[in-house]
View 1 (cartoon, rainbow, N blue to C red):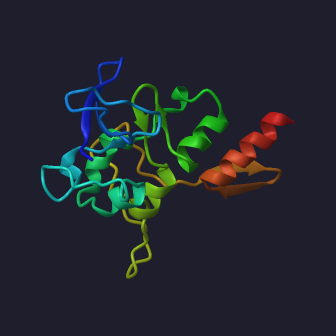
View 2: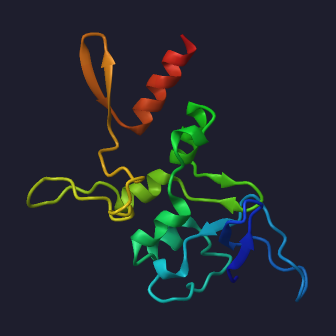
Length: 173
């Protein structure tokens, strides 16, 4: 299986790993919503994509081969809050991944964050800057994934899952 380059209706160029093979040589790819959106080839050890087969076209296989996590940001960065119509869609991107219409799917942000997110140093016990987020971009938040919420008389720090549950609970009541 080899990656394909496609242009979305918004003129953005994507690299995808089509999950359905070519019908015949020279025919266009049959795209599915489950085609995997790949980061740029520069995220891997060379300037070409690794070899993919039908057995190893999983997010774990792809992310295991990433050498330059900073190159993941252009493909997998979360949108701004105004890009999401509701809390459920924010949770979807964090827990299951994002679907880009007429393109394919992206990995769950929690998978990327678990590998390259706020890592605590063994020596200093301080959090390191997430290695997959650009450092000199004002649009990128480098802070903790925890958000302070006023609950009664106390301020509680909640993480992504807790925040979604909190917002869902309070939006229903």
